[in-house]
Amino acid sequence: MKHSFLDRYSDLDSPVHRIDPRARLIAAFSAIVIIVSEPHGRLLPFAFYGIIILFMTAMTRIPPGFILKRCLAVSPFIIIAAVSYPLSVPGAGVVENGYLLTEGVRSGLTIFLKAFFALVLLILLTSTGKFHRLLAGFRKLGMPRLLGVISALMYRYVFILHDELLRTSRARDSRTPGAIRTSRVRVYGNQAAMIFIRSLERSQVVYNSMLSRGFAGEFPDMDKLRVRAGDVLPAGFFILLLLTVRIISQPLTERLFN
Image 1 (spheres, rainbow, N blue to C red):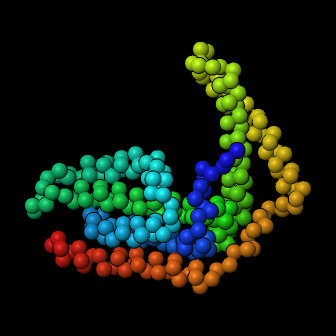
Image 2: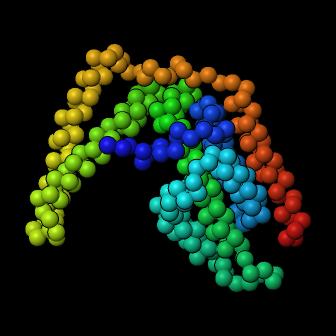
Image 3: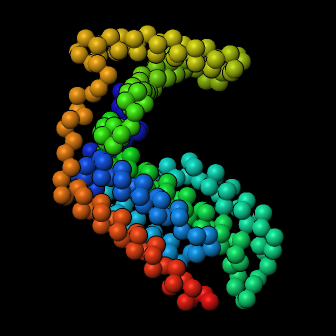
């Protein structure tokens, strides 16, 4: 069984992949805060944000198609939020001062761009390293121990669910070739129950194996994280670059559009 649907490109070798998970976490969430704090209606700064994020995406060597596919899964919610805001503003469709993009439409576009860039940053964060290393970085930054252990176990046991889904689907297809003639609700309900029972049994076997190997609530690779200057400098430069755009964009936008 191949399980690469969560961190498919985490094994790539790029400058971003080699950065410590803690530095990547701080850089990603700082970038999201900077971008989201941009006032509504100012579109020019997002062109610079887009260039910076595009350059960083190229550095990771992750295929753009992979990122776009993941963005498409969430895009309906982003589009609904972006369209709903201008419609709730009176006079959003009226041309003001000769500009086609009124305040309501510009605000809707900024909502869309904020959500889109934040989503891309999160995808890059989870795709540039193993998920258990990311959880280890969270734990080093102060995540509660219980929450970290639960997240790590959920990440590992989701593969068991995926295995059982593949097995039961293969068994169902071998017994019902062609179209399903009986009730689909009954067939899929029985399959879901079988997945749950088999996954529960396998999870107990896996957990007992972990206990026999000395698992005591902490994973052994947590102490291997080491922050170096080569991790802090690129992350700090990335944050500083976005912060510079955030600071100088307001007077530049006022000068162009006022």
